[in-house]
Image (cartoon, rainbow, N blue to C red; front, side):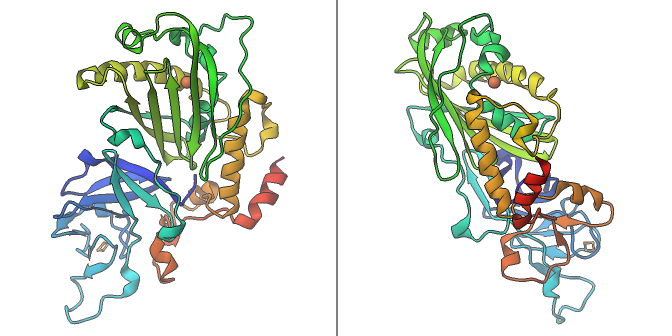
Length: 380
Ligand code: FES
Ligand SMILES: [Fe+2]
């Protein structure tokens, strides 16, 4: 798991004027909406004696710990410490890590890391979301997998024929191959668009609206944005397009919460959303069955522990990219984090840690960037 990316913490509708606990990257957070409607996100661990902030209550725009009533604002600053006289100074070290929050696409994004604003990878761009010719339906699933396995699956054109028989791909064509992949490189990801010989859409309403009832070459592709998001573009005909964006939040290294934003420019009345959601669930289940049984659960540290072929080109490039982010020191040392978890309360380092060194909680252990190359070679 990696710090310094935006992760979806919740749907917008799930966070109101009361504390909501959530787990991301193996750590707990509390979210709440203040009176002006702004969402705050801080670490769930009180710096006094470890109280769980999400069990407390909202006071004004702040949150109060249930144990001794220390109260924190959305910046994580302790603004009330009831056991000391009100004219005594509250120790600066009482502050809790607070994380940047943005609401977009009906979701609450939290930046889990310490990078200053100008260095942060952007939230994935979904231009269709605000385009009136498109409509969005959302699906949310929790899978017992390493989220990276799912990103790789999305960028893997060879699995459709075998994992998704209900697309009309039956795994029976002797001449089946995957066209060469030409990677499209972007600042925070890679991807490709490929011609794909495909049957018509299986659902009758979708098929009629797409305007194609025979097998034909269509265009489809996928790619990643950052370590935890993918895009999939499917263009069954020139006039019908489906663009799916999968935003992954690792609850921990073996549990992946996936928010799937399914956008389309045909059958755009809201009443068709359920058809697309049902279809999405059906297809996602086919992926889940395969992914939850992969061995090992976690993506191997070295590509040599698997046999990659040209159809895995985007998968291999994604692995290169996240090793670059690992080399920057952004990868959590999960083994160390678990080894210490009964004794040490960790927090994901927030941007505030670049301004002050004075924190009660330890930042989660990270694999040192300069060590990651030798670590990779050792694994190989
Ligand atoms: S543990 Fe939170 S106020 Fe004491
Ligand atoms: Fe799939």
